[in-house]
Image 1 (tube, rainbow, N blue to C red):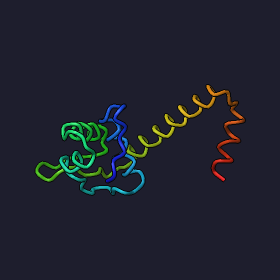
Image 2 (spheres, rainbow, N blue to C red):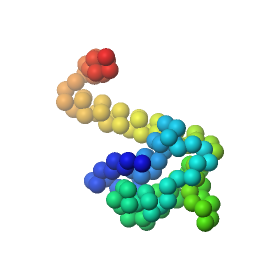
Image 3 (tube, helix red, strand yellow):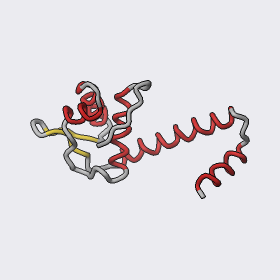
Image 4 (tube, rainbow, N blue to C red):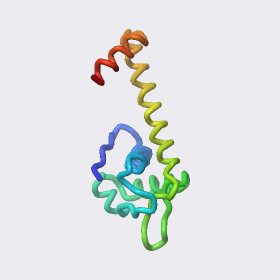
Length: 119
């Protein structure tokens, strides 16, 4: 996996977000074994404890499960990962709208801009 981490934000939540994104987009399938904590940490350029914490948080949300001696796996029900992705969409969209409004754009102007951008 190609990790895209912002060193100015806490790393653990970013790892959680990116794993959820992979699941929600079908890049990781239910019951598929994930890369090892060590592999993920090396590739992401972070401490293995950071990845371990992220995987444990995702386990607490029923997004991942662990099998002792085997590794981490994607849960059968991917709805929690999809919900996490949708929450991230809402958060990023709200931040975008707040920024554009702070720059003096009206709601209609923002809508027009988005429509032009997507054409």
